[in-house]
Length: 251
Image: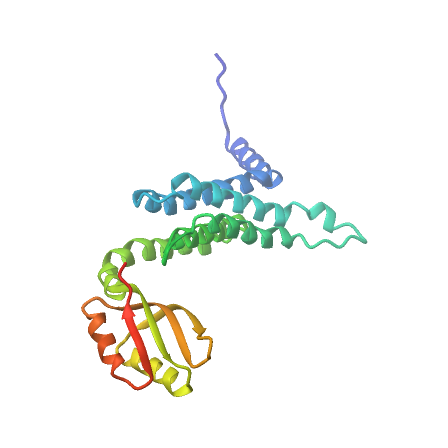
């Protein structure tokens, strides 16, 4: 059996060796940054997983770690090259292209079905997760940790307490409708004014003039308060001069 007795002087030498080890092995610090970035991404991903989103725990970890790795390479990977005389190199372009790559990933999470768009919050969360990974990879720990806290605040607390408010905002029906009015500036201005007074919002529109250019035909998708009877609204609108047809199209 070997017994090692450490004296006070030996302790000092050991501490110096440890400090020298970390000083000469910067890659360990970089590795710790990648691990911290993965933890931050995992914290964000837990919330998405609990909401059963496609991009969940593992995806956010990978995005954060990958962004941190790219940031470390961008910041430190070319140090031996850029210090050489006569060599000009913009290593920050690697970090800049992280956002481009994440944009493609986020775009794949957005789904459009009719007038409904899904996945915007998840895509935005992936984008912020990448930014958190970049911050941690660059050694800006406080910025990264605060960003995670703020993102969780938005994702969890705001979702919980503002969901009623969101429902009020979304308490509108999207309804296709058909309008035909005279092709005059007065009739168009009258239509816009009527819609504004009745708080009817036009989501999208297709306008076409008749062959004789006397009438304008509108195919609209509109939003309105579901407490409103849109048929009665259009009946009032038909009483205006220059309005030939106005009705909602049944879904």
